[in-house]
Every structure is written in C-alpha cells, then in structure tokens.
Image (cartoon, rainbow, N blue to C red; front, side, top):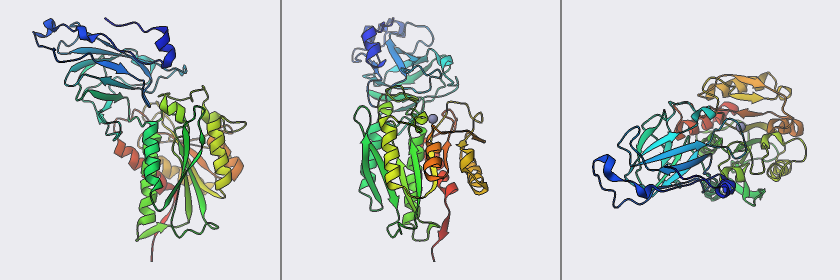
Length: 401
Ligand SMILES: [Zn+2]
C-alpha cells in the first residue's frame, strides 16, 4: 500500500513522500503492540537530501515478517543524469522500529547489490556508520532514533561546509572570504592558508577545489584531510614545506547542487566542469575571478571528484597533456598511488574543465582526482587520509634546522 506521488510534489523537488503507516496492523507480528509508534515519514527535503523518491508503507508480510514498516526507495535524478549515483533521505518518527528497506531500481545505478548504506542520527557531526546488511533485494534496519539520515555514502551538506569555513576563519594561519553567491544566493567561500612568516613574493600558489559535481561528496572529506595536513605541517616545529605555498581552497563550487542533493549538475542543469572556457555560470565566474585576483604562480592544482565507476575500473587522475612535463608526471604517479580505489591516470583535452583553465591562465598543472564512490573500504577517515596523501604527494616537506 503506497501513496501515489502527486505531480505537484514531483515538481517541488522530486522529493519525498510519506505515508500511511499509521495503519499498521499488529496482527501479522503476533500481536506486538504499536500503540506508541507514530507514523514514520520519509523526506529528502533538507540540506543535501535528494536522489530518490521514498515511500513508506505498511509491511504486509512479504519478505521478512519482523518489519514494522516497509521503505521503498526509488532512485531518481531530477536532472536526468543516467547513472543515478546519489542518495540521501531522512526517516522520522520511527525510533526503535524495524523497517524493511528496498531500493527498487538499483539497476538504474552503478550501485552494487552488495553495497551497504550509511546512516547517522546527527547530521551536524556527520558521524556516518555503515549499515549491517547489504542492499540486496531488501534488508532489515532498526531505526536508532526518531531522526535517521540514510545515504549511499558519506553525504556532506552545504551548511556543514559553511560551518567548517567559519571554524577555520578563527584559525591564525587561515583567512576566509566570500567570493560570490550561487545562482540561488548561497555564499561561495575561499579558504586561504599560509605559514605566518611567508614571503608572498616568492610563494607559490596551490589551488584546490571540490563539489563542482555536487553529489561527489568524497571531495569534501578529501579537502578536510588536505586542510589538516597543511595545518599540521605549518604548525609542526620540526618540519616545513620546502617551498613557500599559499593554499587556496574552494570548498563548495556548486552550493545549490549540494543543497538540493543533485548528483552531477547545478540547479540550472549545467555541468559546471564543462563551463570554464567561455562565459561561465555565476559560480564558476566567481571562482575564476577569485583566482585571477589572488593567484600569481601556480605550483599545482587539485579538483577533487569521485566516480560511480566500480573500483579499479576508472582513472584515478585526469590531466591535461599540454600542462605536464616529466616532473609533473612523476607527481601524478604518486597521486595515483595515493588513491585507494583506482590505479591509472589518463590525459584528455580539457579546455572547458578547471584544469584547462589553470593551464591556459597560469601555465600550470591542475589535475582532477577520482575515487570510487563504491570502494568497500571507504570511511570518512580513509577519505581524509587520501586527502592528506594528495598534499603529501604534491609538495615536499623538509626538517627545520
Ligand atoms: Zn566529477
């Protein structure tokens, strides 16, 4: 028994839905009482929710009779991208109830059936935990709280990025600034990190950006790890970077896409990483303006992405052949080593991509890094570790005398 979505809710943001589980009858579970249980509801209508229509229905005894309710997840992509790759929804009012979760169209995605979803009860802390059971043809899950967020990987909402920027702004070696607004008016930020005694005339610029493809959340965790590595080196009395760097980080290149839980495009339907060559959408224009105003000599650039391709089935690093020399290729090899889930590099022409822009305007190397969203070993910590390794692979540190 499932409610049909109305056209209005579909239009609204493909979200949601909920339903009538209040009607659960206790008869099929041997008389267990549900008197205190309210109706469970499901929604993707929150910061970074998206990628599915979720229906809550009564569980009528098919499958495993221990379930209190049945959650049907239909993967969707509001922008029509064929490989449905992002999933983040919330179940409410179901504390201690056991639900049977089905992903009804898993074949429309590259999500392997043995993938396990992640959940958290606290989206502020982002303490994602992996579920016990594989998705398969459906599985049981006991809701630990009245608010449970469920995602296919480690979703990272816009407001968490903003909070991270605000925390960093209080740090003595960090400066932050708002570099513009997204199409829908969300702030875009740059984070600048440099050692306190830096000689700006000699310093090289290092550019890192992520979330152009908003659902590729792994980039935010990579960026967190990169920031940790940079601050660790700057603050370690025993070592320093061999060259002086000013790190410029753009943590949310596509704020509207992140907020709306869109996998690969912005809320206007642009693939932002194909918009760097001519007149760009406001988000990319803001980044280009910031870089032109603040960057002089680029040492290296990273554009942090992830891919729904399965492990070892896609390049870990994409680069622009025109930008690289022998030395750069060696660094690229080290970067490939740093990626857990893919193990090759590939060159493509890239005028419309960020790395083409960095080549044209600064005659420097920026690469696109990719990790598999479905690498089984992936944790928030493994992602932060990769982010640290990316900076380690692309810079040199020396012991201080
Ligand atoms: Zn991407």
